[in-house]
Length: 203
Ligand code: SF4
Image 1 (cartoon, rainbow, N blue to C red):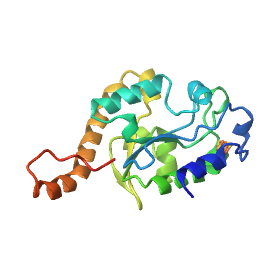
Image 2 (cartoon, helix red, strand yellow; image 1 turned 120 degrees about the horizontal axis):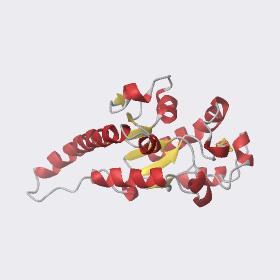
Image 3 (tube, rainbow, N blue to C red; image 1 turned 120 degrees about the vertical axis):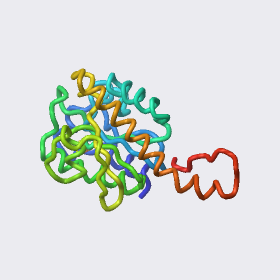
């Protein structure tokens, strides 16, 4: 199955109660061959209307943070744990997470990112498969079976808590270092053959 097939198969998903209140399924967006993936919690009002993740205020902050470390949204892939908006932006219920999680795992299997940045508690706990607080684990990479997980505060949390924004910016600088380390082997290999600046073969 391709990513497009998976997206199509979810277009009319009715597997949990969130189907009844959504405008549309918000599957994900970005480069389907990205080496870096960002995973948030669930669509909000604007995402539900537009069918694209992270297009509201939190999305604008995410775009700015990406650009601050030399990344663009077209280089990465963005998705949420939950594909349909919970009513009133309430927290997803545990059974909703369990029902929708396999689709996120399928997305990850198809995209095959080297690095997955989980944003906030829900995405981090879902991918780590344990109860951990984002306050404790943000900015620390975890080596999982198929990819490296890098937890971050959710941009929406940083918008509502002024003290989190500097920490989020700091974690993005750590992310820049991880990305550069991922690119280093490519640079070394190519550096022996040419003195020209080496294009990062990450995306
Ligand atoms: S939230 Fe996930 S499981 Fe529930 S209806 Fe939407 S796509 Fe299906």
